[in-house]
Image 1 (cartoon, helix red, strand yellow):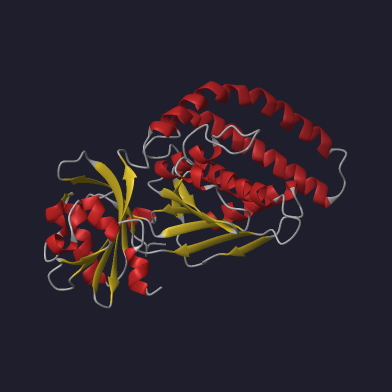
Image 2 (cartoon, one colour):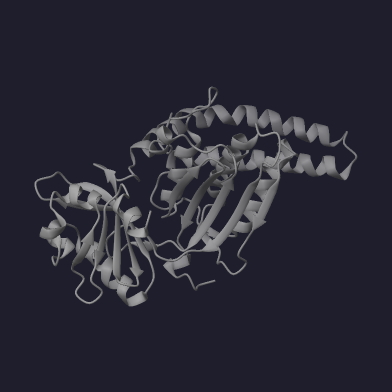
Length: 350
């Protein structure tokens, strides 16, 4: 199979634009079916004559031309002639023969829909007060145990229990407002410290877990709420650990941070760049295809004992910090990616 055949068979719309005129040179079959026109009719036309998008979305092509880098815009409203408005993730990328456009339709509502977030907020209001009484009892028990523990390792674990109880109590106090546009408590947060602490918490429950940590020390701190970000990371790492726990050997979780260009949250002039990427990768069996589209919706889970709120909470925390969460999965490699803005949207600010 040659490269052109592979592109032709790609199940999502692909468009090749002329480097100079930004008009259509080629589209694959999926694009022809999606637009309802043949390549002969589309050739030489602007893609924005075929679909209605915002001015900011149209600029993705010129920005790609100017920067020479791939750009992604998520949840862009788009309207085909004679069709209802839908939402797309659009990627513009430079090629040797022009500018490529890849479109992935997200359906009649953006994938970052707040429907799931509203449910999580309601659940938060219902259960927050139920957490506080048992937390007080657990902390009291940990304090009593401390008098009987002599080893440094034992005392260190009790300190970890106490600090986690305090964090969960603070989290419960704020669960009602977790979905606000801006977190209640905003501070400069070292994501690497959070990742190391989260790893330690998960590993203390399962010492046999194998972790690989690859952090970019040049990344700036993020601005946000450390407790809710910590909870999101714990949920993602816990999911990864559960995915690999049935493997008899070679199970591994990779925690990685890196600078990523070209991802924006929104399609207007106020859209935020999201250059700070936190990756949680496992080599478990992968996410079933039928589950991928609903992973971040509440009460969706493949675990018999699961409640289906963990990933919905992760998505909610990401939105509350102006970010997004993505997932790619195949057998042997599942990657969750939490993308966050740099301070003031400036990736160079430290």
